[in-house]
Length: 113
Image (tube, rainbow, N blue to C red):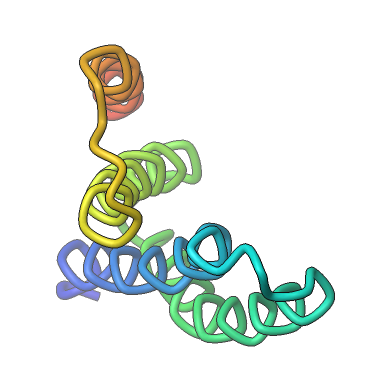
C-alpha cells in the first residue's frame, strides 16, 4: 500500500482528536453526572476506534508495531497540547513541554534502523 505511509498518520491524528475529547472533554463540564459522562465518552470513543483500527492495520504494512506505537504517542501529545490550550484553556508549562520532548526523543529512537 503506497499510500499507507501518509494515510496512517492522518488517520491517527483524526482518531486522537476523538479520543482526546472522549477522555478529557468532560473536564469542562464537571456538573454532568459521571455515569452520563462515561456513556458519552464511550460513544465518542467508538468513532476513535473506527479510525484507529484501520490506521494500525494499514500502518502495519509499512511500520513495525513499536514504530506505530511511537508514532501514536507523538501524535497523542501534539493533539493533547492543542486541546489543553485551545479547548480547556490550560496552557502547557515548560516542564510539560520538556517531558513531551523526552517522549519525542524516545519515539525518534524507535524509528532508528
